[in-house]
Amino acid sequence: VYMKVLVAIDNKPSAQAILDALVKMHWSEGSQLHVITVRLANSEAEATNQESVAVIEEIAYELHKYLKHCEVFFLAPEGDPKTVILDMAAHI
Image 1: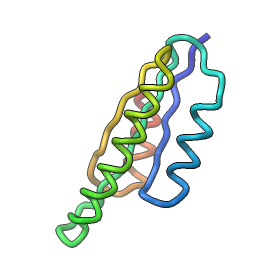
Image 2: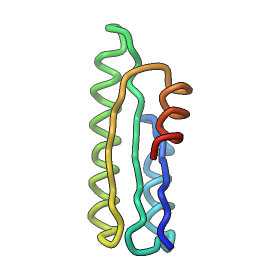
Image 3: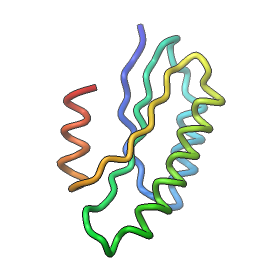
Image 4: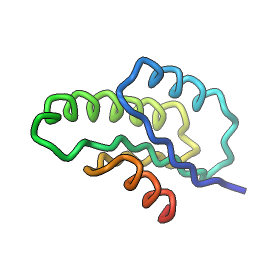
């Protein structure tokens, strides 16, 4: 039995700990990990958005490298984090 998991991460020091925890878990063949970071929808946050996206995209790449038996997807939608995360959870 495979799982579909939504992993919402922001660019905080805990991001690396999340990666480490996900790699250590025993995922079933074909499990899907949807890694997202939500970009804030204002021009003042653009530099922060770019940095966060780069960090979280690297985490998704590392997950793909270590969890070859899983599908890893990366998305960086823009909007209100609470709304975007709940919408994503409803559609994966």
